[in-house]
Amino acid sequence: MKKCVVGDAVDEATLIERSSPLIWEYRINTDAEKVIAAEIHKYPRVSYLEGWSEDDNERVKRIYERVKESEGQKAGSRSLTQKDGRMWIDEYNYRGINGFVHPGGMEVTSSGTNCQYLTSHLGQPIGGNPCWIEVGVAKFSEIFGGDPDEFVIYTTDSTLPEKDQFEPHGNFTNGNQDFNFEIYVSSVQYPEGYPYMILWGGQVIRTGHVPFTRGNPDENHEYFATNSSFTPVSTAYFWDSYLYNDQVAVWWNGNLPEETHGQGLSPVMVDMYNHSPEDQLSEDEKAEAVRIALENATVREYLSGEYEIRDVYYDTLTGASGGVERSERLPVVTIGAGDVYLWVFVDLEKEAVVAVTKSYKRIPVIVPPATQPGSTPPGGEAPTVPVPTPTGTHP
Image 1: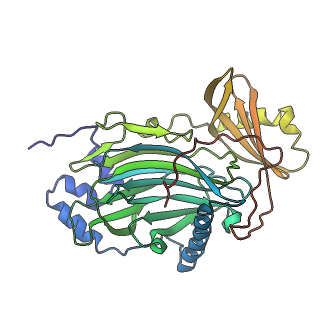
Image 2 (image 1 turned 90 degrees about the vertical axis):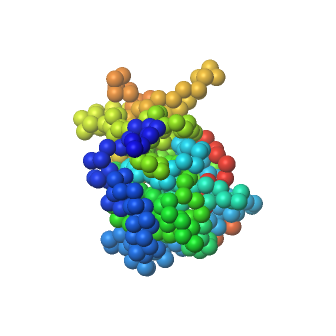
Image 3 (image 1 turned 45 degrees about the vertical axis):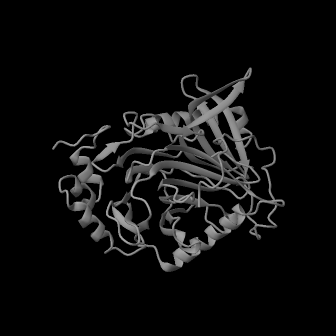
């Protein structure tokens, strides 16, 4: 019997290239789900990527605990505010997701945006309680004891005791590349629940059981800052994602039967999913953007000493005029100069600088969360960040 597929089915070649062999096999073998579930049980609960150690694991967990303590500090002079750019599906129809994530810079600073998560979830409320699994990339500033140059690959299982939910698996220092991830939940039920596995770069890094076989997927860029003193960050995005239903894998695009919702100004949007983004700057365009930025009079005021061109990429600049809000995608040149970071938005066609925002560098002083004072960069401008969302979207 021919299967009825709603949505654009993923071709066999893509599944073989990107999905775990355990998963794409089930499309041609009706008994394969039992094999998948049995094979998942053979993997350890947590696995590390190459170069990661138990010491690394404990180090990052201590950092994460400081973040959690700060999130829980609701009163007094210091508290964390969360803002998101997010896309999601409400209906609980999908058993997994496979996609690419491009972290970009994910800049963090002790005086502004001090931690970020670029993460994908699959979940369903059980008994009125949120329940999910996730995989993503995190960045933590020095205020929590983190290294602002370190990207941490992590997973979360909200069904476990709190101390076991968050697990770091590896790290890297260059976010300007694409990473493949996968979440999959089996349809075979065991006494402990439905087996799941999470993969990063084709390697199984976590397994376990959840009390659901279908969930609602989302992909989320979460920002946190002390007392809402956000600073601008580079563009980060997901792309080329597909979802697993009970029959096949289907592309996450506008042809699904469910509505895909989006919010915030982070470029986590539906049109990022079918294809690689077409608005990447060429090397010539990057060089031209740098030239325009360095010739600007306002920028030159900060370049009396040594400076560093940190990155050049597209980002969204928002503003309002006459009560009308507008946003546009522009090349942005990020510059480190003396005690400031500059974000210079340029118009390549007009060969002009459109806007300059800045953030002051601070020497981190790590103190207990309850006594760490909030601070806003002196002379800093209001950053462009996603709109606020309800709390509790991250464990």
